[in-house]
Length: 156
Image (cartoon, rainbow, N blue to C red):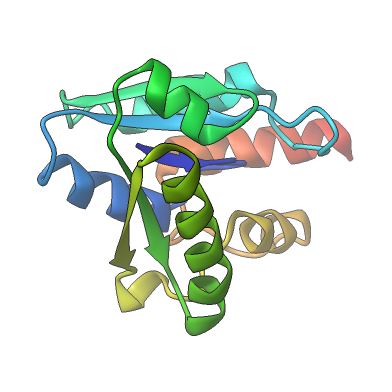
């Protein structure tokens, strides 16, 4: 399981998903449904974008979840969560979460170091750069960049 908000999916996300797909028979990429968080793209749009950009990996399945991630894992027979780590600051937070998840359910968390090429990359930064007309073509897949530019133009 590779959980996240994916608002929007970045090349950093795809690096972790692709590498996970080589390690596991099946990888579920799950979009967090958080109604209290204001997202640029709806859950359905994020699911559609993820389906588009993960087509090269037939063992990757896209889904959404609401509530505790470990409940989703238990219900779907998922034994491992994969998290990409960009920096030490990510590790501090993710370690606590991993320990809580393991305590609650026995689900293990695997930490994968991010490709240094993407160590600074976050969806929020991509949105901010794109909002001000910056070039994000090397940060997201071309189809995602098109949808991002279109959405930002709609909101202008």
